[in-house]
Amino acid sequence: MLSGEVFIPETITVHLGAPDTDAADVTIPYISYVKNCASSEIFPTWPENALRANIYVINSYALNRIYTEWYRSRGYPFDITSSTQYDQAFVYGREIFENISRLTDELIRSYIRRQGSYEPMFAAFCDGSRTRCDGLSQWGTVGLANQGMTPYEILQYYYGENIDLIRAQEIRAVTPSWPGADQKTGMVGSDVQTIQIQLNRIAQNFPAIPKIADADGIYDENTANAVRVFQSVFELDPTGVVNEATWYRLSYIYVSVKNLAELRSEGLQYDEITRSYPEILRQGDYGDAVRAFQYFLAVVGAYYQSVLRLQITGTYDAATADAVRSFQQTYGLPQTGIADKRTWNELYRAYSGILASEPASECARLFPNEVLREGVSSENVRLLQQYLTYIAQFDPNIQPVTDTGYFGPITRNAVQAFQREYGLTPNGQVGAVTWDIITGVYSEMKCGAGKRPYQAPGYTIR
Image (cartoon, rainbow, N blue to C red):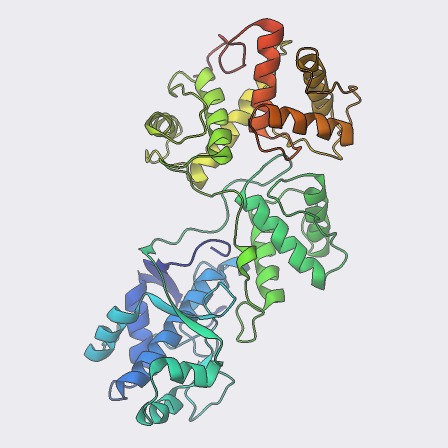
């Protein structure tokens, strides 16, 4: 959940003891958990403004534990403990006070956040009588409320003036941040960008890890190398591939170096959670991300009879949603018509299988699952250069390039010229969208119309 939006979870799993004790785990509605903690931590006879301030704190504390995956990134199967030594008091099955229940119903969507940060604040607190801490004093809130302070003023008294009370927009189920598929060279998306951002921040504390110059969501060789070094430093198999173990180790170290689960957190900045690649696409969306998704889906639809064919338009219309549902049905996914993370991963796997078995063609090849850009050397670059040089015979605005297999400035300029000519973003990089247009133009010039791999007659896999 670390890089995603903040919402109120439907449920929370509580370990009924200290982290390493042999105690039961219980999964209960999240709102019931907050009511239980509030009834266990504070007294219903306190002034209402003191109760409100404490409920904000209890809620923010628990949301921080869930948001940072504090326990799950360490391999525990729960979100929080019932031990006040580690977390906050929770007494399974206890009675809930009526006024605390009513106030929690009202306040459950609101949490504390540092100004300029994104994550729910780790709102440390103690009773202020038997124990003292750097955070909020529970008994101290009573005196402040009796002085006429509002809940927000009470919170500012303990945590400083640079805090906001934020209202979450929805309540929904928590899903693990692990994307469900190994992240590796050639992949593109918000999950890759999360890896790059985390590696770059971790590298400040562990300088042996090389910085990734541009956290652009493209899993290139520089990203793979940084992953390998990270894996070596933290005693993981240095494969350069981010599997589930590496993903959660990254999350754990990232949260630790930024102190996101501490009152002195440096904070998760907005630019760290802004993603170039949306995690979810749905009807009404449009743009390059939709066009790339449609490309992969169109290829799969050409080889799987059960997946509806579709046109690559860049608009997520009703036909695209229908094609997505047919793909989801084929792969045993919920038939939502929405391109969520699981759908992306299964589509990527299906496409990779087709790519591995693709017969050679002189007309056009499928996108090689490798974003081609300046500095890359490969046979795919050589093929790209041959396509561009052939197109240049008929288009004076595009300069021919020698097929060296190295993507240098001349190749970048040719790609940008092609992108400008055909209304694409002239970034000089060749992803699925630019590759599709280049190979489409090339195939029409060399072999006639309609010779793209996903349009030509072929064998059927299923």
